[in-house]
Image 1 (cartoon, rainbow, N blue to C red):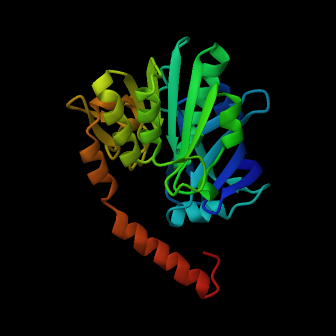
Image 2 (cartoon, rainbow, N blue to C red):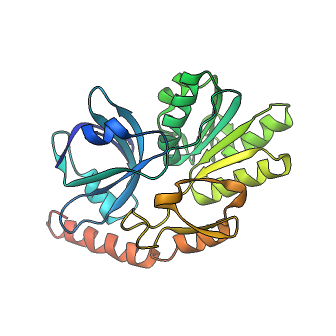
Length: 281
């Protein structure tokens, strides 16, 4: 059992837990993730480690409530415990020790971007962050990203805050204005990462993306998280989750991400009907 020592509601659909997990905190590195399970019959949910504190023995996870399992997880309160937290899993991110790096993050992708930006900032890397969401009420971790960035650009799809447009468009604007980047890290929804990759591809700027496909065991055995990178099959749980974005087959990844939408819809409907009838789930 892993105790939740702090809970914060970041947006109407996004929660942050600080979880007591000393063995995981001891080994965690930026880019790695955990798999959590809330209850014996709960779904295994992969979540990037958004921060860690080795001295306190805690890790931070941030998640968006998009289906039944994450909605149930969001009901937990400070002082409650999560049944299973397994990790750290995946490979640590390959982060530079110098130069200028653009961190482009969309939606809940800001959370996994933060530990990478933090680590680079501590090394003396010039970090220029572009953080976006559909609207201002869905922006998360602005203060945290500002603290580890030399520049912070806020974007909203609807223009309610900062730059009116996508984060990929803001990156394009900066590049066209003469900004120079040695690398780009892009994390967020698949369409956002794909669009960012197409901005940097003509310029040959190395661009890292973090993939979070359907995942089951987290050890490379089940094959559920396979993606095609550079024409070869890779497994996100053991070969990633960070990959060279210019090599990722985003069309295939997006097709696979839609495979269980109907089952997810039905599970959410059953949960909603159970709650309406007076059940606890």
